[in-house]
Structure formats: C-alpha cells, structure tokens
Amino acid sequence: MKIRELHPDIERYLLEDCYCPHEIYSFDGFYYQLFYEDQDCVKLGELVTENKQGSIIASIALPNHATEGNHEVVLFFINAGVVVDALRYDATENNIEHTKFILNSGVEAFNKSGRKFDEYIPGNTAKSLAQILSIADAIIID
Image (cartoon, rainbow, N blue to C red):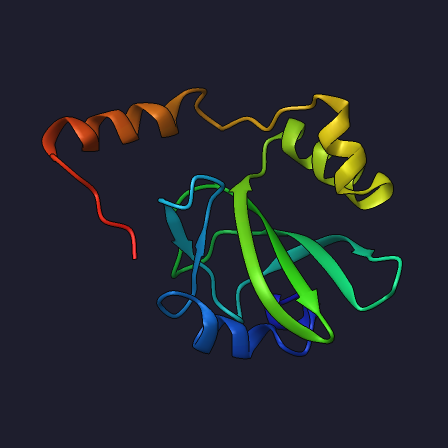
C-alpha cells in the first residue's frame, strides 16, 4: 500500500500543510523525516472519534529511495475529512504495541496506562538535543 492510499487528503496535506513539504515531526517537535505519497506503508488501523467527525490513521512507513533509516510509525489526524496534523515515531515493537493499544482503547486509556514510547537507540533524541544545545546559545522554533 502507498501512503496516499491511507486517506484521500494525505497527498494534499504532505504537499501543502506540512511545515515544509513532506516533513513530519516526532514527539519533540524538533526532528522530522520526509514522507512521500508514493512511499510504501502498512496500515495498522484507524481510531474513529465517538462523534465520527475525527479519526487517527496509523501506519508503518517503510524506507524508500527518498528516506533514510528505519521503519517509522506515522499517525495522520483527520477532522471532518481533512488531514490536520501528522506525527512520526520509531517503529519499535514496543511502539507498535502501544499504537495498537491506542487504536483499540483510545488516547485517554493510553495516557492513563502509564505506557511509554521508546526509540531504536535509547536516549538518542535527548543526546542529540544536548549536542545541539551545547553549540548554540538559543534555538528559535517558528
């Protein structure tokens, strides 16, 4: 399956609504990876809100010619048929299980569960941020 096949509005979102085209950020809001509409993925599932106006589509994006590294879980947030946001994180076994839990039980249940997401290399994000901050007096996020 291709990323564009997850939802009819994803291609527009990736081209027009990402901070820069194709950028999807991680939890920290600092690091991003590029994802493309023709990139292969596996759909994990979809969580539809009670009022059926919103949903979260979860997938595992597979690396391709335009991306580097490992598989990533990519969530697309939809409101009234329009993709309004996206988030990515490492597709570790732990994170895939957490994503399935969210799809089956909801975000609130996940928050109450005490579960934690992890990284392919534990502590890598914190280490990278510390290195950046060690050479910069400030970071401006637009």
